[in-house]
Length: 324
Image 1 (cartoon, rainbow, N blue to C red):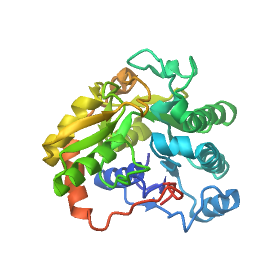
Image 2 (image 1 turned 180 degrees about the horizontal axis):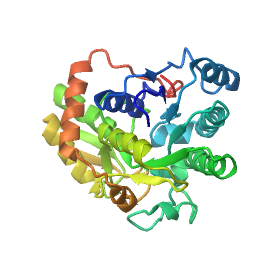
Image 3 (image 1 turned 60 degrees about the vertical axis):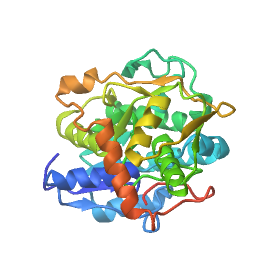
Image 4 (image 1 turned 120 degrees about the horizontal axis):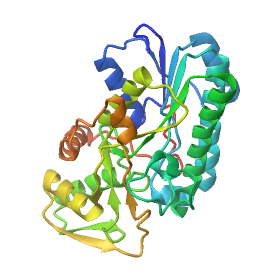
């Protein structure tokens, strides 16, 4: 990836997109192009084509997606599958037709079978049934990975795909309805501490295990892969170890200063029993995680405290985090 090349980061206002901008800037990449959703609706093919024709980016990081937690996935299945299919199809196809040198597409561990062996190797995709609570998002992401592979085979387009593990970090969505687990726990613990509440309710049993990664660490891996990898097979990005939700909740409580009890609402779904990716392909390329889980939580909570008064919260009808 040439340092003088023009880089388009799609979805730059989302968690991953913000981290990508920080990493690119930190590594000396300055010719970066972004658009908010108001400026460019990635679901509109004509608008995307006009943008590429006028800006002529050399490289594309596709961090744009319709995202949310278990509750949002269950409530808005059509938005998750249709929105993501439109966004990624417009970006991948138009990038190829516009002469983009290289594109990176971000998948998700949701693409793996619910009962996939652990740790999950890249070739486990499509070997079993998906987790029902996020199948709509997963199917769209699988299609995106396959589209990158197809355009590489048929057209020689240098499109690579990555599968990040569970992410959190600076600029996360802390809305109660639509946030993912880490941001939701930080918000719950903080509000409970401030209000003096004696307990925090956690969905499920607390026994599922999750691999959790600080978004800036993941973004560093993406920049590394854009510079050092070109292949059809997607690459897992993770830290190589997992933690139970109960133990992670205890870590968050310690960082936030919440000293109350946890109440587990077992009427709510646990989701996939375990998610741990095999990072041997990534480490063999020469990259390893650098930021510990505790450090990531501390940095995220510090940002939350600095921005608590003006955090944007998204209502349940407008949770799309694509391109702004």
